[in-house]
Structures are given as structure tokens and as C-alpha cells.
Image (cartoon, rainbow, N blue to C red; front, side):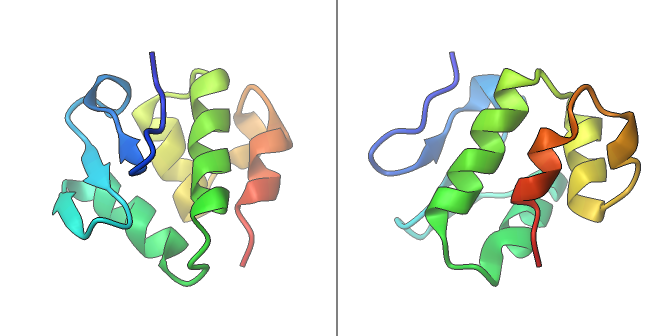
Length: 89
């Protein structure tokens, strides 16, 4: 099951190969993880990222749906629009 560790490890099981250690400065990047990091880079708020990822998991969003949310495309078609409130400028 998806869980954020004390070092903010995003587990591989959830993102199918995505592993990011936030705050530790170690990254194994793929296209999606790069998009996630770039999207949240401006906020410097790990809590916003944690909330986004936890909601994505709870809503069982696919990787494609997560990518579309990060790009701002098609959010009206998702199972819940509640996740969109965490995607702020």
C-alpha cells in the first residue's frame, strides 16, 4: 500500500517505477516524476505534494489521469473533482 515515509519516499508500487526521495536530494526520474517535481517546485510545500499524491491514490487515478491533472487537461472527467483543488498556482 502507498505510504509516505518520514523521508517522503514515494513508493514504486504506486507509480510503477517512480521513486523520488523528497528532501533528501536523491531522485530516480522518469517523465511523470519530472512533471510532478516541476509542478510542485514553485510551492516548496511538501504537504501540498503529499495531499495530491494521497488523493490520487485514494481516487485510484491512473498514471495517465495524474499526468492530465498536472497538465490541467480534462479534470472534469475524473472520478472526483476534489483532487483539483490541490492543484493551485
